Image (cartoon, rainbow, N blue to C red; front, top):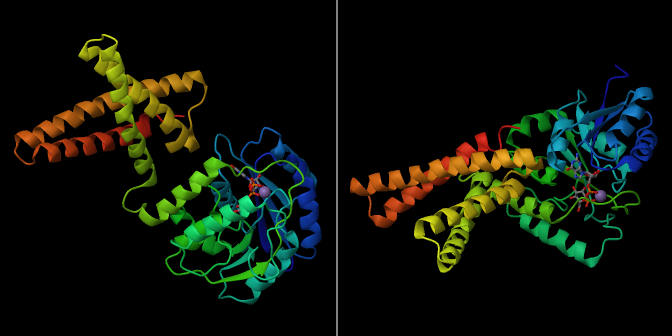
Length: 365
Ligand code: GDD
Ligand code: MN
């Protein structure tokens, strides 16, 4: 049993070509004497990160690659990597050398030595750890994100935002169906997915400075973080996507009204102005949903966009008919007053639009 696989190191990558070889060399040094494999999960990086990793994998069988097409996301990449190994323990480490790989053997020893332990976390905020050369702005944002996370966390983690940890593979597999897989916060996702708090240990490390490539943490990732928190708190009652879809739908109201007013001022008939308002609202809705709600399945290129826009307009038009029909029915049956009837119509219309557009507009490519 001496050569049994002990550990998989999952490395999510996007445009990290220049870091791949160095990381493998460092893993080789840090994990000398252990049986490990590295799984690069690359989202089809334009810089050819996946090819670089495959080139190494041809002569070093410990190096494996999952190349995902048409998908993006740090968390979902980590999940796929964690599910792709036979090793009993799996670590997640950034591909840009900012995490301290020399911690890996100690993490593995801890997991192997204590059957009650589920996860070992690399922490910047226990004594001995640090954020390296972060500026005040990033420190403040990270602290805010950490504070917010306390609202969903069960245990008292010092660094729930850490992207560097090791977990038992069977625990990861058990939790996988419960993960929201949104954004960057894979550890937070795992810790909050478990019905019983996971048993964890923390090891200090100092976050290193990036020398090759650039960070992918941007405003969208920050927004995704808030979405992920929402999902954990209220997702059971109103799914994230539906909440976003509805919020964007609400935004359509002032757009509709604005265009309607402008068209009437410009001398259009009410009917024509009304159609114009509805088209404007649907078009803005379509592009916002495409950019935000369905960011992970975003339609691209004029062909997909045109197809998507047409199907979205058709779905919403039918939704509007359903909305008016249901509201009139409820009202006529004297089952509700004016406002209640209208509201029921709106809810039915929204659910209709959401359900059908997720299938016909964003479910086809
Ligand atoms: N497959 C895949 N898909 N990988 C991605 C994606 C993606 O969409 N976005 C980023 N990555 C990879 C990067 O290539 C890198 O290897 C790693 O994920 C971390 O991304 P960075 O863009 O370097 O993140 P960061 O350094 O700003 O943030 C890190 O530190 C945070 C702590 O504040 C990450 O480790 C975060 O998870 C961590 O919370
Ligand atoms: Mn980084």
